[in-house]
Length: 282
Ligand code: SF4
Image 1 (cartoon, rainbow, N blue to C red):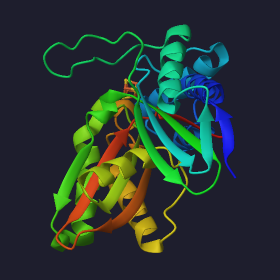
Image 2 (image 1 turned 135 degrees about the vertical axis):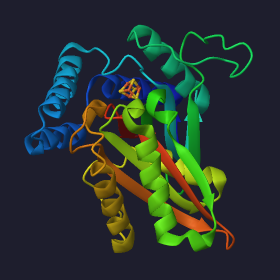
Image 3 (image 1 turned 180 degrees about the horizontal axis):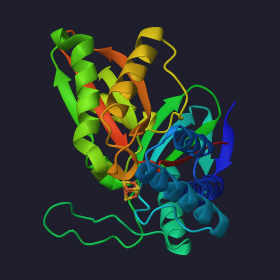
């Protein structure tokens, strides 16, 4: 049976997600930052963590952005095949919600229309980046990510030969974080996509930045790889805001997909502590 969902409901939901993500730090990230503070002895790192936590409290208490880079609007959408959107277009509703929200919430408009020659600001933070999958059922699931580009710019993809194996993947993840250093506003959250093809690896990596801090890959081998990468990065001493200290990364979140016999793609999407994301189902 077909379920009708008005485009206005998509618009309203996306507006709610943008408001929620832009002003309120995720509880899992705040808890992890507080835990890092309790573990840290080095005074500059403790000071940096206090500043990050205080910034989050001020932002959510006063409805002001967590960071001045309010991000490019990225959406992961699962659209049930039994859904019929009425009274408007689906993607148009998402685009309009981004334009309205970034304007009315005074979020910085960070998108230029032409990437190379003209770089003129679109003035409403559109267009968003939308990844849509058609899935069974009559639900619509929307994950919004406001992606800052200080960290996005430090992201990497490597098309490794299969013989690179576990060690090659580990080195790719760790070196991405070490090269990012203070530029990605640590403590970082790394989303990692292993397998698929070139673009599928990158899409998985972006989505994994929102999997949650403190979650683990369900397969023990990958969960162990997540932990080993985290430990190696945190041993680097880059620390919060790059001032030195124990906590450089809060999470390494891996997702995987089948791949070609001749390749071992690894994408690392670097995200800062201001990892802003929100999720809703209709
Ligand atoms: S990397 Fe993150 S915390 Fe740093 S400026 Fe960009 S959005 Fe803000």
